[in-house]
Image (cartoon, rainbow, N blue to C red; front, side, top):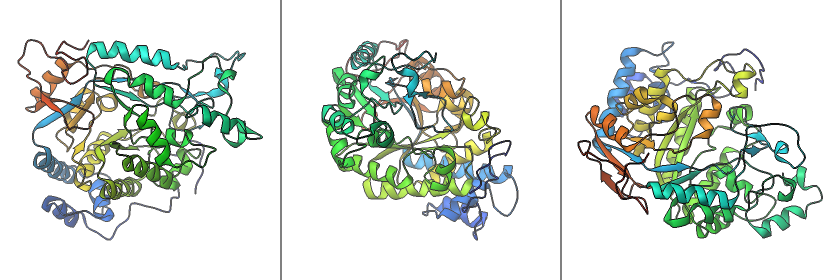
Length: 449
């Protein structure tokens, strides 16, 4: 593998997997239009608009987008869904060192006595509870929480004892006792109880976080997710996936769990009855073959579990990340690539109903365009969004129900408030004088501001 370090544009690594097939674009498009299950080669042909020519062909691209939009209409109709949610990330302290991330802050900077200034934070369970309580009063349904891998974070008191018993816990299991830090994040179970207060739906504990919550033990992912579920966890975000091909992970996140580990954790979450989302983070060093191989992993996982409620494409925001600062990448995905990724996700993932368009990643105008490329969900209100903002995203942190109703109806679609798992759905009348959330435990239709 090429370990370039400076000024090499995306796509020039000597990867084993290349966007090369023996299929034709025309055959792949015909299969997509017929609703046949696509092969990896089919997906690559559609995503590249044909490997028989360089670059993206505008006419072929439109054919792929049209096929995806028709499939979207057949599968989910004209509704565009969104959820009233709050992001409450517990801590930015992390030592994993992912090169695509500017969310984390080196954990040692959080220790008592450190004189290094940093913009990071750690919240106690009590702080998380207060934040969620206040958001519930505003009408939110869901609390989303994705956090750094703080060395002082453990599943519970028993986990702390196990980790502390190692001869060299700092290097063997990435553990330091919480009293070493200015702020104690509590345990994962304490944070779950705090953030699920008042009937809030807690969407948290990525596979990477689940690994951190079992590190140094012989506990299974099933045991960890079962205990998290008992403490209030209601569904699992399938982030930390990035690209589920290890030769890509070796470049962008060598300290993270491997692809098979991610799948194992997700299967465990499904086995204890937790609904899940799945993601892809694309537009960095990977190529089109990697993207479709990732889609195949997700499709196979859904074939086995049936628990994935939505697929969330995440376009790489590069500006403030180590990958960009070190010259490994020069930019993120192009608009053409964004649109094709949404479209091919819709066509390839024939067992997942909902595809999300992220206004945080794409902005309002392009985010709405994605709803005509195969997507049908438009994220949530996101009362706080630190991860994308820290990476250099500039599309804001909040979306009101009035904005949702106006934007979605303006493109001729039906705005619908949803629950996290899509089992509860309430159409929003764009002509109503007042529109606000109704599904949250304390929601009463009052505008969310």
